Image (cartoon, rainbow, N blue to C red; front, side, top):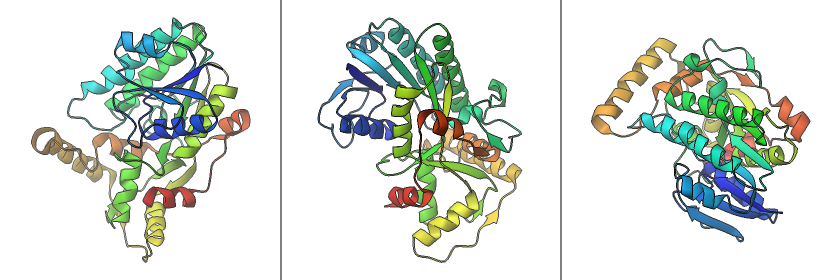
Length: 321
């Protein structure tokens, strides 16, 4: 059967993917800089290392039949903005090059993101044909992931058995950082903010993303991309749902003009860069992504992979517990 390698297997999506693979009885190997926060499931091997280390990658691929590549810097802001290209793009190249030399590799699932599909102005609804181009993307994280996805698809064209998945905004249990979508939910759980963007998000349960990646490895067509999304919801409606889940009457919130939201994000990000050195509550990239957001169509994954999603209400409850 061979080993399944999960780069970034200690992260939010990666941890759920590793657990799902282990529950199926698969032999799983993690390559990550940090051990999983909850320990290793039975039958899972951990190797500490960086995807930028060619030697570590070559060793991690020994005996591997399937790769799920998730290792990335997935924040929307960093003190060092060059880290996005270094890890997300250059790191992906190292993984792809090592995989191309690995004997016995049968499938390579590259985990991209919805953010590579969001440009300005946004269409009403996005599917796998969306390609806004590098310059239209919201920030350095998005550009690095866009270029990494292009490299993965180029490798597929050269014969590497690559399938690309594009999760939307994953939420759910077990997010200790937290990642930006869960951080937003926790902010609303505390009651704020009262000024919000008039935008649409697509939220997906992280456990459904993990299952979608497994299905992509089994049934995905080589060289294709698959959106792994959930439910479209307006930000105001989302805040109201969270209020009700917290047992309170929905708070009154007001839309903030896009230009004002961007200006405020620029000021906050400048303070993060030069004064606090802590992540901003709202980054410029995050605001641009929200303003460029639209509905996402997961129909291709549902038809071709058998991908399914659970109700958003259940995912919100799990994320907020």
